[in-house]
Amino acid sequence: MRVLYKVLLNLIIFSCFLLVCYVFQINNNYLSVAYKDGNNKTQLLFFQPIQTPLRNSSESIKLSENFNLINIWLIFTKVKHKNSPLKFKLKTLISSLLRFSSMPLGLNVISDEPSKLIAEDIINATSLAYNKQIQVLFYNIANVTEQLSDLIKTMQPFFTSSPGTYYSDALFFISLGLHRIAPSNQKQAIMLDVDTMLKADIALLYKEFQNFRDDAIIGIAPELTPVYQHILYSYRSRNKNTHLGNPITKGGFPGVNSGVLLLPFHKLRSSKKYQQLLSEDVVWNLTKKYSFKGHLGDQDFYTLIGIEFPQLLHLIPCNWNRQLCEWWGFHGYKDVFHSFSFCEKPVMLYHGNCNTPIPRD
Image 1 (cartoon, rainbow, N blue to C red):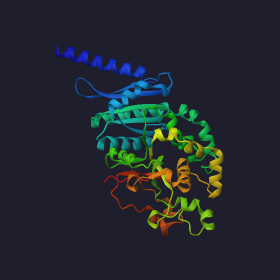
Image 2: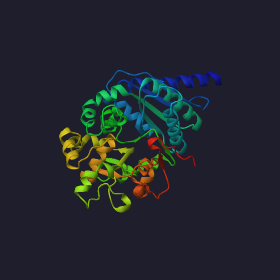
Image 3: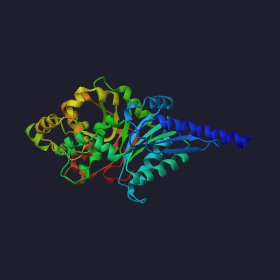
Image 4: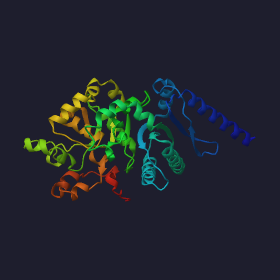
């Protein structure tokens, strides 16, 4: 009788999630949800795409509200083999998220089909290991870039060094239009680079949304290298007293780093100012004004916003994006590098940018 009860219970649970899958409208994406089975083990269900519009998902609002999720966005693409360094970076990130998390997490992963299969294995194994509740949505990278093609084509000429280079890839501009891709019920979310690792509960970072001013539309940490002192060289040579490109320790604005983003989607969707800033004319005028030729994708755009309209940015503490890259310290900026990289607060999140190993302390 007990065996029959467990079988019936599992069938009921499975039927409920099939119903959720039916009403959860995802445009060419994938849905997966973790749940407890009759033996109190975590199972991760993956569903195939449903060919219905993404933004009309009223039932998905109820699902997310019931789960009280912290939504996190990642991009995980071009993983061609199981020994790819990106695989181990994703495993490190997911493990750290689940290890410290006190709240249910909603992972939104932009991926291609081969990379998705690898991500599924990592998320499944890690969620079982930590026995944490997790909801996972996969978004097809080709569909995402197609939906944002107008924005990407506008930004690429301004914020890449040359066609075919690393940061010329469309994926480095997705964050600028993520509010157009995210389900309409997602009011805000955190976006993380895959080369990051948590040292604290992501819920603590999520609380930073409460500190946004009314006019702030992007949460982002300061850049901890002199890259923008370098990019702004021409402007700085004409404006000797400018604070732009100087480290925060010297009262300056060093630019920002997009490895960690706090995105209030509800503000971005309704902000006329933000839509204007995404136009080619505005970007052209700003890059000309500051002699700005960037090569780092979206974070160049956010840095320009911070230069011209600082009130639109909410600077999150440096310890929530503790960048580890030291490249500029060995390429002409050794004398000033420490003043940029200094961050005295206890590390909450490591960012192993430029393939820098993350400490395992």
